[in-house]
Image 1: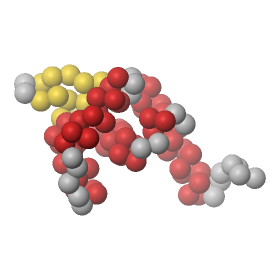
Image 2 (image 1 turned 120 degrees about the horizontal axis):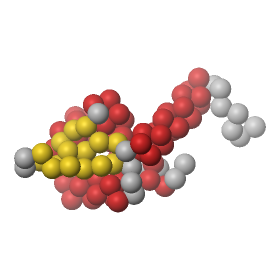
Image 3 (image 1 turned 180 degrees about the vertical axis):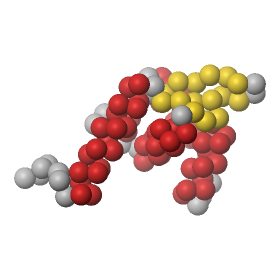
Length: 98
């Protein structure tokens, strides 16, 4: 797994986008805050989005006044690889560590 997916916030953003297809940044932030039951620092949040766009795992486009984000093919593939790994660990099917 590359470093970009080691952050729980990055993974959670990817899961939200995989479910929704695309979302405006503010809606992404609100959904994460509701899930975490905690406020997220805007500077940190938008820095995370920018880093993920620069890494090629998210795309962004402007719609009116809002930036809208979506997973790229690379981001979707990496998220699915991670999901399969997590599922195998939870199901007890992981051969790692043996």
